[in-house]
Length: 442
Image: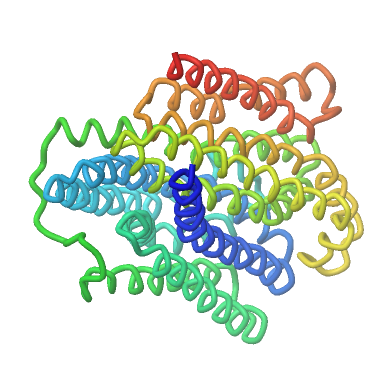
């Protein structure tokens, strides 16, 4: 009994060691995202906010593909690490880094040369097209840095250095925010500078993560990769769920933008952009918890420690429920006070944004649990369930309810469609997890 208590204390310490820095790093990034929105809205205008929201799915596509490689690779890396196979684990990292560089180059070139077509495809109307193209012109080339930086952050965390991952996020966000204040609020530059300062912030993050390897802070080493098709397939299979999970954000942002721009025009897109900025805090926190527990769950799975695995999973679920309930309550209660921070004196925009914030954020209570359920299957390498659940979050119930709201109910309840869709995803994911747990106990 004493050993059990000591084990639980050790796991709690490990949980805090990984999750707290991960959440702090994500929270700082989320706060920067909000500050960025405030600066753009106050310094450039609400049309610029709408334009950034239009091209937001492209940026999230970059993150989704980064997660495909990084999280998938980190799961396989941690599994080999738990098995004591250091060389195999390191080569997984090197293969993933090379893939991230190659995909980042393709995305950077595609986004830059096809920026106008991409903006039109993503729903830009005449008013939003010019600023959207201008933003994408400068943000797309940074896709390479974004891919590599995100990949390094995940592997550094898995290489027993969650603090440097946190510090990279914090300092990158602080530098980014400082440059935004100087060049947008003080010197009154346009939307292009918002993209450039964002890229510089990512560059600062990259320098922090690369220092982990320069100073040999962990066991990982950057070497020429030895490519194995079977290992790459395993990485992609493990990462598919996380990639789809991340791609769900641009998927329903794209869906909402198309619906909202038809119903309320640029005003609606700008309001939804503000809601997206605010809700990014909740999303980043629940994602931070999931990213923080991933190394522990993968490690315990590799060591076949079922009790430790289950205990960490349940800690993650409880943490996400608690955090999301508190943050959703803040959004609902203070919605009318939050909205004016992002613009200058547009009462119609304040009213619409506050109305959205009274309904839209509730979905994140269920998202926090669903993310942990997807991670549960992902770390156990039950990738069919993990991929199915993530795919449904991309193209599933949210889009179905959105179509019903627009074409059947004449846009009534449109801002509750997100909640309805995520509730369905939660029910399915929870049912599958409980069924799997019962089978593993028999």
